[in-house]
Length: 92
Figure (cartoon, rainbow, N blue to C red):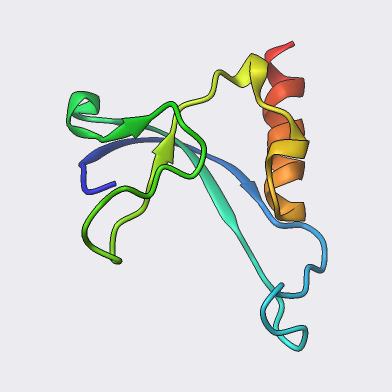
């Protein structure tokens, strides 16, 4: 995101076996943190899905979705789906 962040806390580390979607012989381990950007106004945020209208192939597109509207069906990977479920269960 090319921005400084404030570290808040560790949220979740993968606690189950997950093979890579790209190489089934490799295990994926993800670590998630709850953070806050120092300067959120400098982050390019889109409201469109798959907004890849930039000139460099080294950039990523970030889309803002309210947690209350975020569903596991919107995500591709099993670990991310679990994290959304965990985040939603902590806020209800």
